[in-house]
Structures are given as structure tokens and as C-alpha cells.
Length: 205
Image 1 (cartoon, helix red, strand yellow):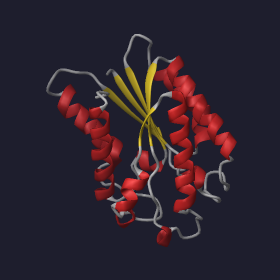
Image 2 (cartoon, rainbow, N blue to C red):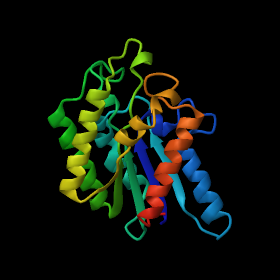
Image 3 (spheres, rainbow, N blue to C red):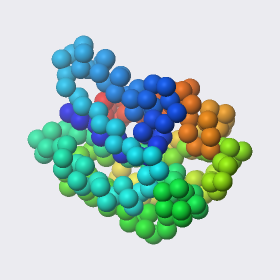
């Protein structure tokens, strides 16, 4: 793999983690496993933006890939977005993303990634803590709805997806959140290990 490009929201960005989030932890793993010890040059890009929603992400998707990838390379695109879309009053757009708009945007990203000859995988959304949601109207029911939409789109298009919601719900992931959605250090470590194991099992890293 030449490059790993991670697209997502504030969780991918690494908000509230003293080590920079699960993407930073993944980069550290790549650096120490391949780049420092084996003279590799795998570049990991964190392209997460706090508050990101899928339609906005789809708008910048092509330009981000065009700037960073080349057809001669073997590149991996990871999409970890959707939790903000589920919120009826998310702070980026102040509304829930229309389901059909969400589907169209997600399918668009898959097409763009493949047009750029990139492997693409999806990371499912994570449970929220309703007791800490403050004014934001997050609910696990709506989060699960959007997670299921991502699952259906991935199955339709032959995209590999790491399902997290049900497993993390059983593991009481909400106890590792500093607010409604953002994991603390331990929570990011949990995500990192699950994502790293998934990518390793699929022979993507």
C-alpha cells in the first residue's frame, strides 16, 4: 500500500484524544511497522473534518484524491462518516441529512474512489451516549438507521465494511464517551485496535 486516506468527521479527526485519535494511532502503527523498520513509505492522511456530513464530504472527495493519489500507486480510502448525518439538528447543517441525499452522496464517493483506482472500505458509525447529548438530538435509533443504510450500499457495491455499532453497543461503548459522540483516549484505542485488526485481516495493511 502506498497511501491510506481517511475521510471522516471529528471522531476520525481525533477530537478529545490526547494521542490524536484512532487515525493518528493507525499512522503510528504504519510508521513503526513499515516505514521505520522496513524502509517503507506508506503515507497516512487524516482528512477528517469536525462536523462533517456525507454530502459535504462527497463534494470534496474527488479534489482530495486528485491532489494526493496517482494511478500507478496502490492506495486505500477509508470512509468513516455518517453519525452527524443522523442528528436532526447537527451543528454543521442544523438538520438531519435527507436519506436519499445521503445514499446518493455515499454511492458517489464509491464511484469516485474507483475512478481514481483506489481500494475503498467503510467504517460503520458508533453508538452515542444519550445522557450526554445536551442540546443535540442524537439517538441510537437514528444512528443505527444511517449505519444500516451504509451497510446496504456497501453490500450493493461490493465494498468491505467494518460493522461496529452492535458490537460496541454490547460492550457499553457509551461509557468511553466524553460527550454524546466523542470517545476518550480509551475509546479511541478501542476503535484503533478494531480498525487495525479489520484492515490486517483483509490484507489491506
